Image (cartoon, rainbow, N blue to C red; front, side, top):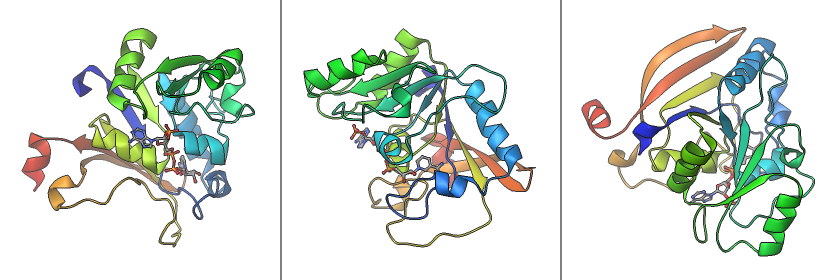
Amino acid sequence: MRANFYNHAVAISWLTLKKGASSKILMKYMDHATEILLHETRAVCDAIMVGSNTIRIDNSFLTVRLVEGKSPLRVIPNSRADISPDANVLKGDAPTLIAVAESAPADRIAALRDHGVSVEVAGRDAIDLPLLMRILYEKYHVRKLMIEGGPTLNYYMLQHHLVDEVRLIHLPFIVGGADTPSLVGGMHIESEEDMFRLQLKKFYLCGTNLVTEYDVLYGEGADGMA
Ligand SMILES: NC(=O)c1ccc[n+]([C@@H]2O[C@H](COP(=O)([O-])OP(=O)(O)OC[C@H]3O[C@@H](n4cnc5c(N)ncnc54)[C@H](OP(=O)(O)O)[C@@H]3O)[C@@H](O)[C@H]2O)c1
């Protein structure tokens, strides 16, 4: 399944100040060269995906603005089809696909379609991420996908082995807080076998920010690391 896709996960380490706060508060500390890298990465991807809670809190645009290039298809898993009608991703400056569950109310699905966005059913009550990836591959010709958080989506994409690569942008400060969002949310793990294992493949400075790139190891490669 995963071999059919190239899912480029861009997981960014500044995240947020506290639970419920927008990541945009901390984004102003990112070096301009790194912002450009972010937009260059968007421009070479066929699609960009963020979780519905990120849309609620950050009201992201997810477009390419700082470099020349086409904005990727914006993909939002949103089982109940309940993102705000004022969400920036519903504005027509780039194509958008909202993935909903079968149980989503029909009137909300119709309201989304009225905004001119594509709506796909992927899953009964929750979003079936492997099914969504298949739809993206077969119907929307997505070969390279960037995942730009938040932590819950990062976790479930990793848990389903749908991520090939993780890229971290390190900003030079530490944010505390037991419930502050971190790189991945999701469930606690029971043992070290459940850890997501990475292999460092590249590191470099982008302006003043350190950037690290990892391959995600699943199965045999991961066992070899243990
Ligand atoms: N770069 C950064 O630093 C960065 C980037 C993005 C976001 N953020 C921050 O992250 C925070 C939001 O993150 P979050 O973790 O609360 O939410 P999130 O990851 O943005 O959204 C949660 C997503 O998980 C889906 N979901 C839940 N359980 C699932 C399952 N079992 N299978 C598939 N999908 C599932 C939800 O969809 P439903 O609607 O279907 O429930 C939703 O799309 C915000 O504070 C934002 O500022 C930071």
